[in-house]
Length: 72
Image (cartoon, one colour):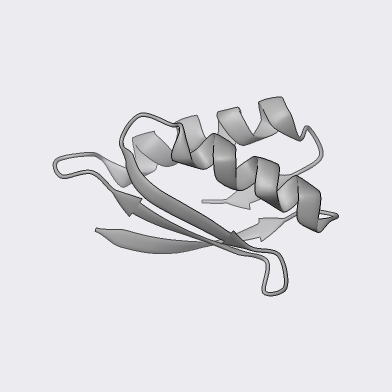
């Protein structure tokens, strides 16, 4: 399952940090962040609950970039 989320981030480097954090989250098959459109595309592993996984993605993104936001 793939979903797109709106994000808020200040710079392209921060967006890259968010992408790396999202990719390393359990339950995420792949993730890409587009700084220009302020969107995060996430593909979930089979059988995962997207809401629970995105809570973990948000927490991991906040660890690497505390002023970012992922709108779930």
